[in-house]
Picture 1: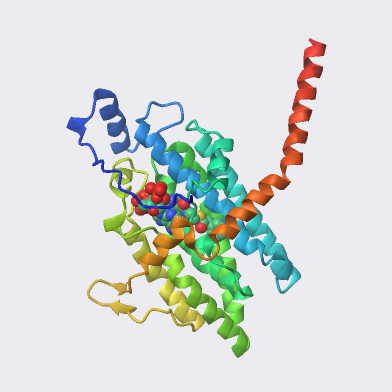
Picture 2: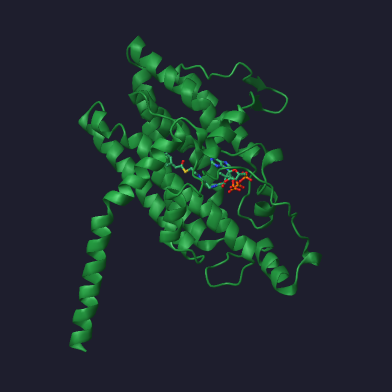
Length: 330
Ligand code: FAQ
């Protein structure tokens, strides 16, 4: 029932000559770097691609609160607890900006919520892994927010105005999140052997899922070509994965931790790290609904929705009452 399968659209990218005049004018605006706004004409495929991507992104922020929320009651100090609460609230805020950005494309928040709760919509694979120790909260901030920033900085320049503007604030907050995660890892690595082991164990479990956040390898990415043409994507999945490895490996070295990849090696000929291939069968299993926590995550979101029914009913009753009062006054 969980629709997280990668399937080919079978459609190639049209050249300017193959487009009708309206579509060509649209493409020329994109090529000239003009932002597309909500009321502008746009091809149906562009609208659908953005609803899919922004919707998945919003759901990721919402589901992404769950693994970290799991540690709010067990954070090791009052200060860490306050920081973690603030971070989790930021993720909720990101979800809300993104749902609003998607709504400008003609889909309602209710429809998107229904797609998430029924398992029809995707959200990032990374949030289907459990947070077993406090070091996992450090690893999420460092690696997961680090990967999210790498992917989202280019999205600030994407062609759709409301999405690109939402990403500016989100990226600022993600960068604070990344630093708080690295700070947790630093403290653990300066601590006892048991704390350092906990940090290493977290890196061992989160490294490969973090690399998978960038999506399938370029040869298996069904949407990239069209998303490049529409300037929704500016870097490929593999390019961003490479940048993330190059940025993060020196940070692991600074912490005194070992990246769990026997193939990781500095390549002098191209000034990049060579690294091993993620286990794509695991990635596809996770995005098909069979990761370690997929069922738990959807059950938690469904429970939150059901538990909130009294509040939605209260809001609706209040709105009806206000309408009636207004009608009586007119
Ligand atoms: N997980 O053809 P491509 C965060 C799907 S926010 C699940 O390459 P595309 C903040 C993809 O949807 C993290 N599914 O697709 C935070 C497509 O399936 P579909 C979320 C994935 O769209 C931190 C199919 O595979 N960020 O972490 C994944 O061109 C801490 C084929 O793939 C965003 O959403 C995956 N990892 O490129 C919150 C950023 N990768 O729709 C809390 C915006 C691929 O055909 C705590 N999104 N798929 O059924 C993007 O940049 C793109 O959508 C990609 C995928 C790069 C994720």
